[in-house]
Image: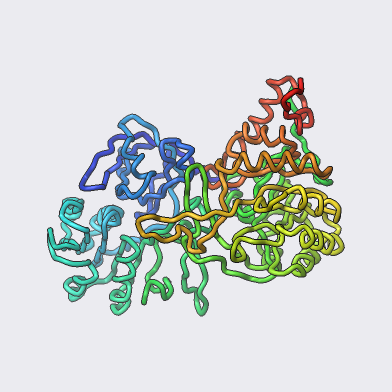
Length: 267
Length: 308
């Protein structure tokens, strides 16, 4: 059996703040089989620090295979992500990847809805990039906490997407959560939806999307141990025929069909 | 001269002393995608229960300084599923397989052992009498010397396979438990399991684990493991699989000096599945640098104050 080596050492090209609490980390790695499915992730070791024991998983937001480049957007939420802001161009990052199953991109041109929240907006860049290549029509609804945390609109504009932005406090775009404004875009002709964002956002949009007949894929967040399926930390209840079973977000996911994600994402 | 890491543990001949710690490497499927499992001296599988069980709600894992708290809750498909679906893959590798088993009751231990006894490709049974996650308050079979001894006796009469008892550190006197399992016929002892632990997210003011309590592993617990291995080494004659926070070959050597015959690795594999290669080669390099041929030359040979 052919053995897989997930170990890579990526070069930091840049690591810059893009809005409050959020950074864009651009990495270069020649040997990484650059992620073929948008929504796959890499598991980073933080500055080789032993006190920050576990790796941190990040969905890849965009790949530029011709330059061996890929990007990650992270938000400072704890000690690990805070330490990542110390990364300087020229540093090396130890990572495992690519990991997990990403979004599926249709072969034909479709009308696609992208639903993103916070950091989860970034992996949708890669989806938009691929959809644009097959001439799909893209509508993106993007939610952020407030105007100082809005990022990445211009990336979607590049793919000629129609963009709706919401902020929780109304300081930019429409006031409220994306789930509260979803009806504005659902009236349009749509074939497929892709969602990525924090769990509360996914839980809020899931029942609304369920009522439509379109195929929906959602990328789940989960607290992970290993990222490659062995520790069973990141399970989620998934419908499998008549039964409901735990599946691993890191291995069977992080992207799931909405219809397979059991009750907790639908009620 | 190349040092020989060949290790003999209760009748199991291992190419080196490094074994997987139960629960951190599943049933071998994931790691077999990365490398030949024969790199390990032995492969200890995640604990197998008699019947199917789902495990705990999430979050199941949290990090602390140099440690990991987990409360996975040992999901298991049950022993028959293990035999049918998981054991065949392990048999394909030239690695001794140690099957960890766990029961909800005392009687389930011998029941599972007798089912496994008839199977090809199992070198030993390890009794998970120590997982602190399964019962409220973290108490477990393994905290009581009498219950522990009874489980050993029942399992010994249910199987011809060597029986390894895995001890919990969450006890007042580890030597009392060690003495009981040896008296009752255990062939080897492994220690330590995780330490009972809890962590709170101060922003949400909720426990970081859905189960509230979990087991602590990683470098944070290594000094506890070293102490307990040394205590048990001085209490019983059966061989010891030492574990708890082994991340490097230096840690593995430290456990050997404390008296371990074999060394378990777990948490490190979650971060670096390939760490086993460096640990095995590092142990060999250490022996060679010290001009020694075998691990026996350093096993339990920590130099105490006053010794030369």
